[in-house]
Structures are given as structure tokens and as C-alpha cells.
View (cartoon, rainbow, N blue to C red):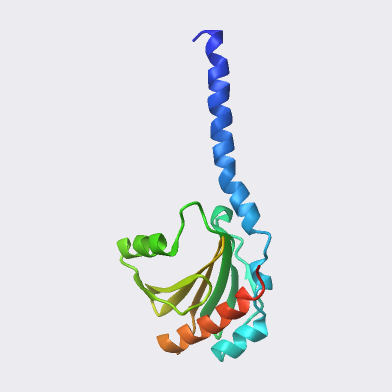
Length: 167
């Protein structure tokens, strides 16, 4: 290599760094809203009808995808809420299609936000996915002993409350 090629490599490296950081900027933008501030322990407990421990951010989550706030429900259940900025081109239809490709059941959701749908990853767990403006929220829950319709009703009620706290 001659020394005249180094400026080209410097430009290439700069482009790669800037492109890589765009995901970090999106994660920082979405982290402006603390997911643990969207719902209270008491609100969740009232909706699911079981004891709920204090929520805390999942320290093991990939920050580029958003960090959910997680709560323990009853003796072994779980409730989490995630809020992030929707990625470029990330829409409810595209997310639903991707989940279907992965053999995850999806169904239309309630009229919450701009567009909502449910996904059922298995083991009695349900997710309510909601797009509202540039935001994408996901409530995931597994409530011990609760039938799917009961969990969906609780998820809808809690999503409506969470949406009142974002602009």
C-alpha cells in the first residue's frame, strides 16, 4: 500500500463509525423516557390482580433495542414494559410479518395508540405491541393462573395508562 491510500481508509473508517453510532443515538433518544416511570407497581398490581415486586431496568438487555423495566408478578410471573424509538421503516405491519416468519402467533390488538397488535411467544406469555408516533412500546406479561383474555385485558388497560405519560 502506498501512503496516498490512507486518506481513503480514514474516510471509510469514519463512515463506518458514524453509521454504527446512529444506532446508539437512537437508543439514547429512546432512553429519554424511563420505562419504569410509565406505570406504578400499584397500577400493575390492580390490573393483574396479584402481588407485584418493584420494577427495575433489565441490566442484561441490549441497549440498542431498548431497556425494559421488569416486575415480578406473583410467585413466578413477569411483567415488563419497553419503550423505544421506532427504527427507520419499523412499522406494525413489518414487525408482525417478521414475527409470523418466526412462527410466533400474532393477532390484531385494541385501538390503542396509532396501531397495536398482540403476539404470543408461547408458554402462556402475551405481548401487546403499540406504535404511537415515533415510539414503539411493548408490554410483555405472564401472569400465573390467568387466562389469555384476562392478560390481554390487563395489558390493554396498562398500555392506555402508559401512553398518557408520553408525548
